[in-house]
Image (cartoon, rainbow, N blue to C red; front, side, top):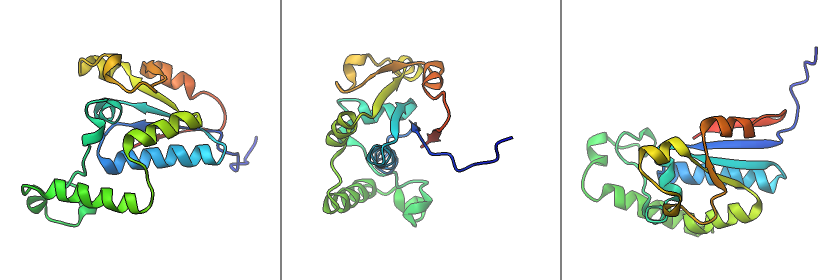
Length: 161
């Protein structure tokens, strides 16, 4: 029996289900970091995560201020008009200072680095989206079963964001 748990990570399979800026950038930074370490990475965009690869929506993602405990503000305050826009602007400014690219550019970088970008077929059907609505760098549309088949093999890790 092999008790060695120090096996290297060979592939990161990231599942993005929400397209708030904080979730999208967390996912993209983890995928990019994997590639920089020589680890394969793939992102499966499902449910509202599809907005991160929707041509019309990816430039309009925002920070969720309501119900987000990390905002350290009462829910009522987070729901005030303009709070979400202010928080989003502040976060984008901070990311710009750190040379973190905008979402569309980051997707191009990920694709060029070898990160595979997949859309969820069920979510696309649910939201009545065609492939033409999604970015050109998309590697394809997968079912959940297809995605799991791609995750086979030792050293593969799945991460839900």
